Amino acid sequence: MAFDEVRLIGVALMVAIVTAIAAGRCEAREIVDVAEDYEYGTIVVKTSERHLYYALGNGKAIRYPVAVGSPQNQWFGTTWVSDKRINPTWTPTPSMRARNPNLPKSVAGGDNNPLGVRALYLGWTTYRIHGTNAPGSIGHAVSNGCIRMRNEDVVDLYERVHIGAPVIVAR
Image 1: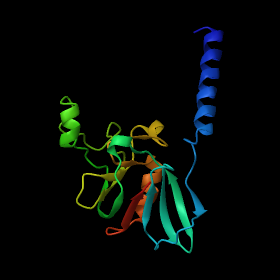
Image 2: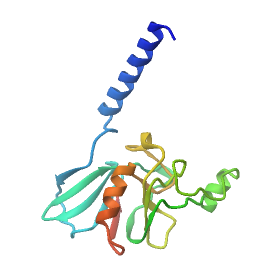
Image 3: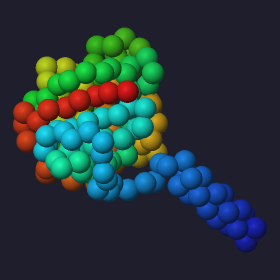
Image 4: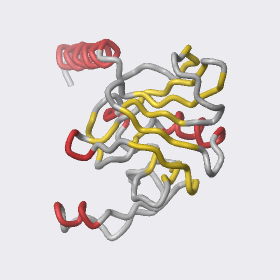
């Protein structure tokens, strides 16, 4: 590869990184002040912000960047964490299969798994808060209704959350 090609690739990579940072897709989890004082352990997803908040009480929360459902797949309401899984198996829902009959029956835990390394199952629904094998999706409205997190963030949240924890999904 010629020097000019290498330099061009390097410049393109730097532009992509700067663009991602400017778009807010590379932000890290952080402890923030929140106006609402949710009970300790409550998970609040604000889809318009593309953030998940884990309430610490006393007006504080850990804020994580997330991907949310695409506009036609977003949902809002209150549920709870009904199960927690390490390296979960992904099984496409019937609506996913209807749109794409070529999807595999399931994908075992591992690098190609769309659920990433951890999953929090929500109530009796097919929705999850989970990691991802597509970290570039964080900060966008692109999922089938699940809440995607970076794998390192979902591991952090997984360790904090208990089964039965309340989950609020709001605009």
